[in-house]
View 1: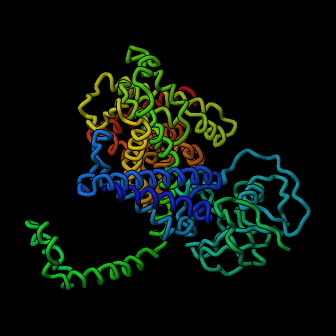
View 2: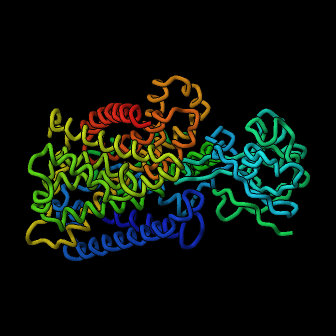
View 3: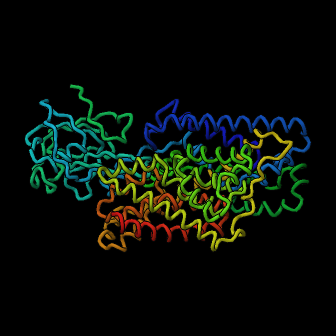
Length: 253
Length: 342
């Protein structure tokens, strides 16, 4: 890899990172919010490295314009033996992908493939009383825990408001209101799903807010209960800026 | 169609007197070449466009890019540290800090892994520059293996992922340190220097050269080198992530021994960051604690992206032997420690 190409690669990678963090929220499709300062710092370092490389290449070119080919192959061979191998070319893929062709956030396809469940049944039984609002905004995880672990059955008969994206149910009965939750990056996404009954499924990957009551199936307050909802209303919403968390829906009414 | 046939033939024609031809005239078939240049990318784009709309391909690209983006800051940290060690730290420092006896240097280096926060991507270039500065490879490898697993960030994440079970954190710490030291001693016993690629030998600071220029050159070289292999590893991990449905997991959860081996293999294939693997392990609730401990001990030491990084840094002869041995030792250590503590 010639030196000017290395400079170009470093600058492109730096620009890609800055574009995804400073000038847009693209990075939230791949990693968590907390990574932003690290990624901005990395982008700046990469830009600086690329600029330094470009400057020193240009300076060398000015000193010995005739020996262009030779200087590109690193006259200071003693610095590090040899240039980067062919495999460094692969770094152009993430850099260009971030700049021009960023893939979307994970969605229904990933959630439908039986990712590990983010809600684990624990021995928790000290549930706070539910606030007396209707509809009651809950996260999908809270709703699941209320249904499967809350012995006091506080959720019984309550109208709840949940939000997530649509994942079709392969078996054809209803659909899933879904969230994908990251621990570190999109490679370890886990899902939390609530089975929605009574309303025809919107298009996969649509973000919706759903109101409804618990769908009676199994014994409420025990793991035998299904985290399901008899839906009353389904309303399209915009994808939250950080869709990879299990936050409660924003109440607009 | 015709133009594509012409392309390969063009090369041999011009190869013998390449310089002369290129300097004086266009290739004879240049209209066909132009046509090919105009048509091929278009066709490729259309075919690619169709294909890349598939949800599986989009998910693959997202996961692959996510692994790269997540790992890049830590890779930068590691390569910057590696460049700095090479340019600024005299070799005598390590001889003073580490015990003279190499067998003693191994556990000291293993415990020293506590100071390098972050993922496993950072530790490979650092280990490489440590070897270049005269640290015995056995100690450098102990550091390489322990650093991603025993640092405070990872241990905190483990404690958060397994609430109310401090023995899991302790077991992870002990098993990881044990495996790292065992690998260091194994290298003293059986390891051969010729497995390491000669380029591993960094030169360090040379009198008469600017230390800053040396730092920048080493930093940049290591970064591009390791970064390329990181992309390879990310691609492999993304392929596994998208191609294998997670329901396969449950088939192995029943048997005690199979589940340990299976989660060890899963740790290698998934290539989850060491900061996140505790949460993944916690989510594998169908498996025994020992199997989940194995997942957390093997993951930071051997996985697809690390194997790719090690191949790039130390050479294939080393990476194959080292990764295989590490996997075996790590499984044995976690089974042993898990059997006692969990």
